[in-house]
Amino acid sequence: MKKRSVRIITLALILAIMGILTVVRLDLLKLRKKDIKAKSAEPVTMTVRAQRIEPSYLVDKIKVSGTIIPNEEVSLTSEISGKITDIYFKEGSAVKKGDVLVKINDEDLQAQLRKTIYQKKLAEQIERRMRKLIKTGIISQEEYDGALTEANSLGAEVALIKVKISKTEIKAPFDGIVGLRYVSEGAYISTDTRIAELISIKPVKIDFSIPGKYGNMIKENNTITFTVEGGNKPYRAEIYASESKIDPQTRTLRLRALYPNSRGEILPGAFAHIELTLREFENTVQIPTEALIPELGKQKVYIYKNGKVQPAYVKTGIRTEEKIQILQGLQPGDVLITSGILKIRPGVSVKLQEVN
Image (cartoon, rainbow, N blue to C red; front, side):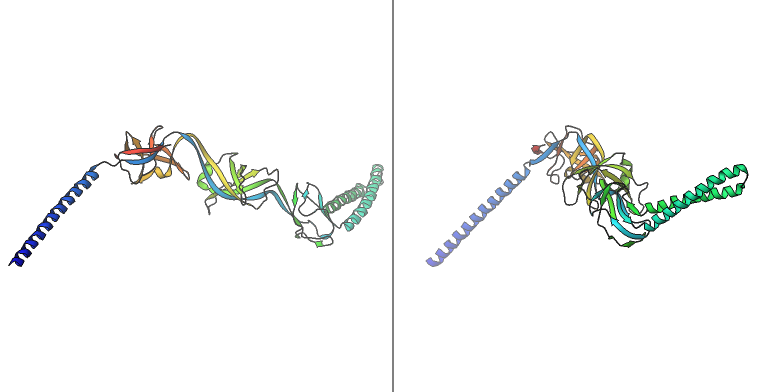
């Protein structure tokens, strides 16, 4: 009987303790929920970075690629066929305009010239005698005209042979550098035999193309900045010519610039990285690209005003790699929010961490 009573009392105590623990647990849960609600009800102030809007200098430029080409370039060939007797240039050497580079055998032409000169002198003597005779009426006008024609014909023949002799000397048509030669002394060459290449590299030209839509922005004496492949040194060149039309296949306009290259450090054929300035703005509003928010066909930014976030709808202009020109919607002195753009909302309180 006693054992049964003890069991009942023990069971009752256990149930009572469990009940007390349950009540305590429920109270704790209620207190925790109240604490969470209270914390969630507290306003959250986000820290952001910002930039004060100030007018600045903007350069609208594009980057394209191009090729360095010689100022002048010609493949040296002969106007007549014949055997080479002398070569007067060294490969890779500089030459002046008019320098004789190659001599072709002209012995047969020289012999023809001497013969024709003798014939011409004789014909001129005969013409002079007959001129005196025609005055006395001893010979007819027809006979005198024949003698005069013969003298003049031989004079023309002498001039023709001299022209042929001049063609046996291949001269430099301009100042430049001779490349590798492809013939030797004693070789027989024809009019299509390649002798060497002659180029002028002071100055050099830069050929490049830009999208056709920028064609109207190119002005006379526009300058470009370029570097050549394998080097970082910048060079400046002046645009002096453009193609007369836009290429219908590529929709690009071909331009050509000139660089003095007075030291000859830039060689033709090199690949060029080119920057071309299209427009310049002295005082314009620019913002970082990450601060702009596209929204249903519009574009907006967030500005800081009286401790809160305020939206501003803007009209944009030129876009560069890092910045965007703002034409309308922002004024000098506005504080533009540049960080946390995806987390903040209009009317939210924010704290400025940094203002550039």
